[in-house]
Amino acid sequence: MSMIAKIPTIQTTDWHAAAERVAAQLAKEAAAHDANDSFVADGYRLLKQEGFFKMHVPAELGGHGASYAELADAIRTIAAGCGSTGLAFSMHSHLVAVAVWRWRNEKAPTEGLLKRVAAEDLILISSGGSDWLKSAGTATKVEGGYRITARKIFSSGSPMGDLLMTSAVTEDPQSGPTVLHFGVPFKAEGVKIHDTWRVMGMRGTGSNDVELKDVFVADAAISGRRPQGKWHHLFHIISQQAFPLIYSAYMGVADGARTKAIEIAKKKPDDNFTTTLAGELENAYTTADIAHADMVRIAESEKPGPQTTNRTMIRRTLVAQNAIKTVERAMELAGGAAFYRDLGLERAFRDVQAARFHPLQEKQQLRYTGRVALGFDIDA
Image (tube, rainbow, N blue to C red; front, side, top):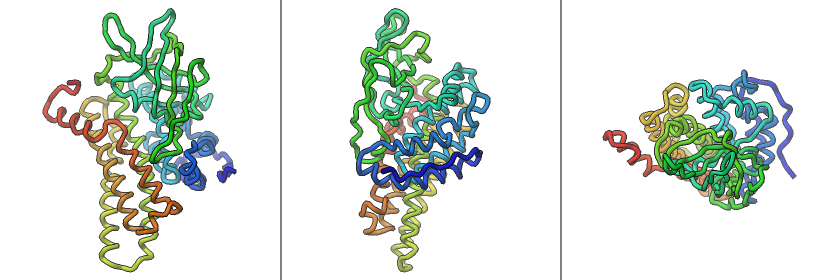
């Protein structure tokens, strides 16, 4: 039986307070979802009830018009209660954020998608992290569109998804291998979710494989085209807009672990070992916090491009390294109690490890940053 109570919907612009209310409810079931490898369905229903899935959609398009910073803070607050819910929600959120940025700054034709998210309370599912620049799967040209065959991994939130925002590769006679971007309804013929998510941490995200078997996508549904494997302007937008939101979830996990460890340590004797560990924790946490805050600032104020992507990705690595270190130091500070599952630090330790695996992973980031610093071609 679900322990999550139905919260009366409150029309409010205080998204932090709303996220805190939701996080308190999510925390009650986080351990059970982790233990059972079960999707955080009740949490997703609660987020939908509270309007979170359309919070960042502009008010003129039917959404709540929350700012980017409010969205990042909401994800972080939610993840402090349940890392899996926060991370899965960030995957929907970054798709909305990219569409909002393109609509506001480039007059891109994303208005229809954003209006549907608001009017139909759609949940968007991303396969971008597993596809990245090369993409995966084949798009075969047929009359009126393409037939798509692919298997997309890491599709977070898939058990309750409405639209899979994904891509596949077609052989263009003039341009060569070309990546096509499009959305596919989960109800479309040929779409199947495979229950594959059995992992170390973030076990409740429902990041299953989604198979597309001969799925038809009309020409009119193709939202973008780009050369395979090359840095395209779209990916500089994604890098700028998506990763501060994704890493908000890991900051939330670090927030929760830090709070628990400090509470335990305050009850311990005043000795050099405890205070030094607390100091190490605070240094790591502050480094992650500063780097993440700057990621959000970059997303809100800078223009996307190779240099902006570089600044964002350096900070992505710093957040990952120091969020992980924060949770490690939190376990040491709490002592042996941290090894017990019921405290939640052991789960936070496993959840935060996933921060390692999003693009650009640390060694890829170092290579990219080095090439930018030296003036080399980033596509080489």
